[in-house]
Every structure is written in C-alpha cells, then in structure tokens.
Image (cartoon, rainbow, N blue to C red; front, side, top):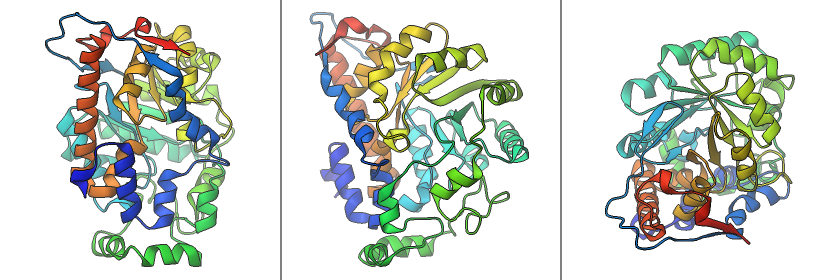
Amino acid sequence: MLRDCFNYHDFRKLAKGRLPGPIFNYIDGGADDEVTMRRNSEAFQSCDLIPQVLTGVKDVDLSVEVMGQKLDLPVYLSPTALQRLFHHRGERATAGAAQKFGTMFGVSSLGTVSMEEIARQYDTPQVYQFYFHKDRGLNNAMMQRAKESNVNVMMLTVDSITGGNRERDLRTGFSIPFKLNLQGLWQFATRPMWGINYLTHEKFSLPQLDAHIDMGNGASSIGDYFTNMLDPSMNWKDVEEMVKFWGGEFCLKGIMSADDAKRAVDIGCTGIVISNHGGRQLDGSRSSFDQLAEIVDAVGDKIDVIFDSGIQRGTHVLKALALGAKAVGLGRYYLFALAAAGQPGVERAMKLLVAEIERDMRLMGCSKISDLNRDHIRFR
C-alpha cells in the first residue's frame, strides 16, 4: 500500500508488484553489467557529512534559482520517456506533482503527453529534453514547437547518439510497440490491472514524434530509435547553432568531463547536467557524483552545474549541493512512485524527500541551500 512507502526502495517494491516485468525492468535496468548504474548510488557512501551545531536554525529555505527559474526546491523531476506506460496519467501526474511542490518538470522527445498540453494545463517551469535526429528539419520543427509552447529550458541530451546495451529489455522483448517473447507475455498476464488501465484509457502515443516518425515500423524498439533515428555525427558546431536558434536557457545533459563542460561554456550554453543517463548508456563510466567536484571547479562560476543519476535520499541531495551543484534531478526516484500510484505516489515520494532534506538541513546547521559548502563533507 502507498501509505506503507517511506523511501525509494519501498516505492520500487510497490512498482515491481504492479508493473508487468518488461516495463518494470525498462525503468529499473541499466546497460551491460549495470556496474555504473549501481555505482551511481554507491558513490555517495564514500562521502560523509560533517554537521555544524549551534547555528540557530529556526527556518529552512529550500529555494534555489537555476537556469533562470526560481524553484521552491533544490530538486526537480527530470524528463523521462514513456511515462504513460508506467501509469495511465503519465506526464500529467508528474507535472501536477511538480506544480504542487513548486519545482521544475521536464517533457521528453519520447514523452507520451504533448509539451503543448503540459504548458497549457500546468503552471510550473518546463524543460524540454531534446534528442538530435538525423532529420535536421525534424530538429528545427521540434525546437520551434517548444518555443511556441513557451518552454522555459531546452535540454539537449548528448550521451545518447546510440542506444545503450540494455540486456534486460532484450531478454523480455520490450519494445514500442510491444513485441514480447513468452516470458514477457506471461509477465503481462500476471498484471491484469495494468492491462485494463492501458486498454481503457487513450491510445498510447508519442505526440512529440508521431507526426514525423512511425515507431511501429521504422523504429520498433527504443534501442532502434536511438540507433537508427538519432544522429551520431552530432558535434559541437551543430549544438552551437542550436544554442543560437533557441536564444534562451540551453542546457547540455550528459556531460561527464571538465573539458566538455568548458566547451559548453564556450558555445554559449547556460547550464549543464552532469549525468551518465542513470547508468543506461556507457557501462563502466564513472558515477556522476565522482565527477561533480572536478566539473564544478572547472566551470561552476561560469555556468549552472546541475546533477543527476543515483539520487535515493535527502542526504544524497545535500552532498551534491555541498559539492557545488545548483540543483539535482530525480529520475527513477519519482518514476517508481508514479508506477506505484500515479500522482498521489509522486506527491508522497516528494513529500518524504522534502521532509528528509529539511530535517537533514537542520541537522547540518544550515538555514538555506547556499549555506552548504565543502566544509560540510569529507571523502573517505
């Protein structure tokens, strides 16, 4: 039951009981041996918090300003694909929760609700996660749509010019549309409520792409979409042109080196997300947290450095902020809650996380996010 969920692992367990196995494993899995995926969360264990006492913490202000957006929280709900597969309300539930908590929300190119609908219905800063396609006309059309929808931040994903080797999906036959093997079909048969909700609500679609790409033929799986539709020749000159075309807050998601962070500054980006795609792309890469300090030291005074991958606790958020991140993106953390119970699930997950962050801020002796700094942490 939702009321019995108190942390990330509880929501994950509830989601696993409610989702067909192929869909659960799509959320839960990573690339290859999933070493990087595991390391993303384990990395926080080598960093210890050092509280400062008797600082007179009466009130705690969790607000931040990042990418030109004023947020009530230092965490936001990262753009993720296929949300109506996890719960029939999908991005509507996620955006509703983000609005309630006064934070930023993102729609993906592989989103299942249109960016226009989200912009009309929800008054919360909106990010559009953009994938760079071989069809340059499609790229321009999608960016123009985002402009006309008054999207606040363009977030170009740069670590996915080809699909990661997600072997869990290969074993179950997970694809869009579904092309399941016997094991996958059995998993769907044992979760009848998911099937009822899927069939009794609006037809599944990818409204950002439907007018341009037939996911039923030309890209029969998400892996095929990455491999066949996205442009592996994307380079810094291409991105510089996109930055100029957009003319506003422009963020590169998937930066993992200080040199790349410096180049993002040079071409006019206003933000970067240190991310390894939740361990779903290049297995064996370092964790995002392991790279955070180095990148902040290189460009933190020139560009907004955002962080994601591996967040499961409020203390994880504090450690990233203490190292210099301006804000922290959540992915699986809220997706499992969405799958478990829709918007009420996301809201409960956010309420618990906010309570953790507030409590931990008090215990750290900090009244506002800017109080956190490297004096508050030590690495073993």
